[in-house]
Image (cartoon, rainbow, N blue to C red; front, side, top):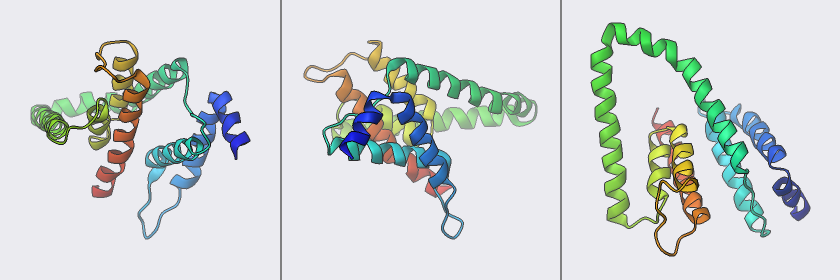
Length: 182
């Protein structure tokens, strides 16, 4: 297994497509109508692979170019899918949905910031928790970019890798819970 994880570590694009392929395969399964789906399966597969590889001392990660490229492709895809429906919904109940969106966004942000401070969570955890709990996959990319580009000032004693790891962990832990509630 060590050789396999070292191969994936040396070939980040193969790692990416292997993870996506496994997520597609696992995401198809359901028990009595309940299943992870493709996105949640990708989170689970990614976390499982990274954790398993770390037991062999191998760190699996994508380079910054791949992260940015696929983040922008994801945002483009979301825009294509949601854009037309967004403008059509503004014609009917636009004000009601806008107010509801603002209330939910502010309440979600407040709860995450309050909880992170109350429980003394490490830096980066709040960004991941916000992205996961609100099922905003785009927010994890934004949080990662804030750390990598210096928009978020790292606390003393923490590295960018540690903060990025906490973002990913917070996201992975909290992403699946809202999906179960749907």
